[in-house]
Length: 462
Image 1: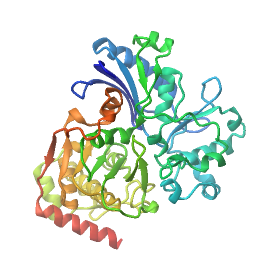
Image 2: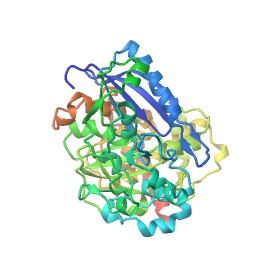
Image 3: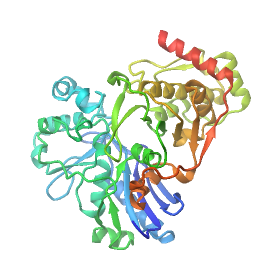
Image 4: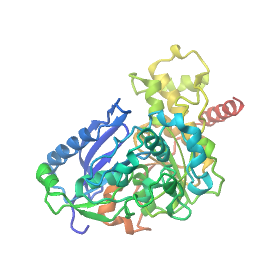
């Protein structure tokens, strides 16, 4: 959008809901407000509190707009969610929390229905991590739901609909292990018809399409100008990937960190993806298939660290290396390359200091990430996004394990909000532009490589 200065970004994460203002001239966040994404227990099942999200979003937009007048809006949101709407635009069903295990009760039936990995590039996952499994369970549990449903929307586009009244779907969210998309043929999968949703899928729109302007009541409530344009939006990890697709030459890989750690391989080696190890074929903002893998690294970090200090001293790292203190997968066994395994320490966990625990779990997370990068054929520099980009232990071990350059992109060029803002700025069409400057992480002690090799040997023998 020519002339726009400030982009308002709705960033709906699994852990937090964020509204940010991005300065489009400097690619920097200049204002941010957040609230926890609290899951309501039900009835009828655990679900996202979309009403509370909407109140927060409107209030945050109004507050941020007073300091940084917002010229345009875009949306990014987590995957593994979709929305069913009635003809009046209301929810036909509450938006199910994808960590609800109810769909597992119908796993055998759904397995017989869903397309194979060769068609969708989507591995079979537990709980509601396949949106198709959510939908199958919901339709079976509520026989009148399909008849009430007028349209299915991907999750970022639901929030764009709340802003504009325009219904749309977008490929980066459809390609996020939903089972609903065929990334090789760039079309809906055969599951859509089997679920009875043919004719009920919203129109496909590119991520950078301007869907329209604000609904009058939204403009009045937020104080934003009535003609503020709203862009279609994008899956959150693909938002993090987008700046690098625009600014870098292949090969390279991106590791997007948060509740989920997702690894993307761009221009890497050709490999056969293993759906049993949580590899998948994501779809980027341009509609291109991207070999990927993921695990719940942020969740695992929280489980291990709990309320302990997220800090360490050099002596903590020395102790972990000297004593070969190791954590083995999987802390969250329902996903990732080591799903089904149970986490264990090779020492008595209670004897660890907070600093030693921080170092050891950071090394563990880096080594699982390195395993994922190998599985998807990654090559070239590794760019780390999100919270783990601030973790020196994670970065050092990742470089030691992979033997390739690790980069931490500067704050001016990274993150889901920045990627979503690029949909507005017009950079979406500027492939091949000069790369943003990144900080290279080059420190690598030989002892870290020895530790990584020992960890790998023990994991393979388990």
